[in-house]
Picture 1: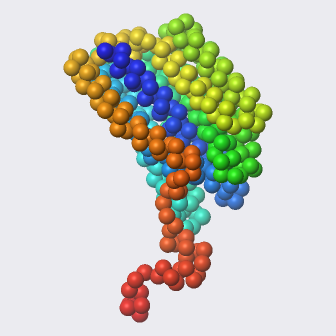
Picture 2 (picture 1 turned 90 degrees about the horizontal axis):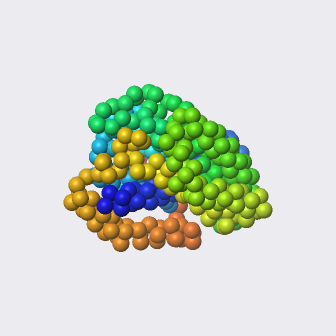
Picture 3 (picture 1 turned 90 degrees about the vertical axis):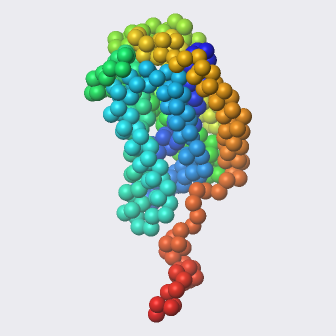
Length: 360
């Protein structure tokens, strides 16, 4: 039964990497888009792309934490006791980027827009890096079991964690750029589509280089995961590489729809290969999934809850994503009073607060 719950956990991790990863990657492109005038076109596509769905995507993270805590409490305790620093960075970053994204829409002055834009974009890079560093700390066996706290510094500042963080940032940037090519075309902006297509190709090449270096690092620093990747997880690894190369070739030829599907399959295959590579351990090579599992009664309750969620929450998610892709959802927020004042003095008069005449 612990294997079934572990598969559920794997599916949730893959879903979070695909959906929320694209959100974080969009923040990366927002960060390097340039000044207000130069980056206006690309930022417009980014806001249209992630505006209706960015909050929903983090439901997967909450689901992962709840399932891990409930079903494998020794692993959850060890991870949180050891990797609390990157976890805090990730948590604060998620809150900050959300606030920055939401309030930038209603900011009036360029100075406030830049500040709030930075609050959205900078954590969009820090959060995936912190999560990749945590994955590297776990994969390299630097998280001890038995409710003991590991080294709070070296557990996430080490060769495997650094490469994990860099690879995570590169992967989400690549995934987001591929999505944004599609979204720009859907919005009828061929110039923005070409802008993101070139960046998707560049990010894809960067992922290939970082992944190649990561293999060398894993061989020296995380040997158990390295051996697992090139044995039981090798088919998934090959599938991920083929999908990634196929997506790059399609992008070079200007195809967006097929490239998006292959990019998603590439990321999903690599994440799955990582978890299969370190199986049966949750904490290589000290804590297996079966040893960390809660009693069968708890696992049964978790699986029942997952089944209920599948029939109640998943249809809502599917409906949200379908409506978003069909362009049936409005952008987040409404026109701000201050925006209308700047756009039209007459409109400013029309929206003057009630009671103003009474005060005069």
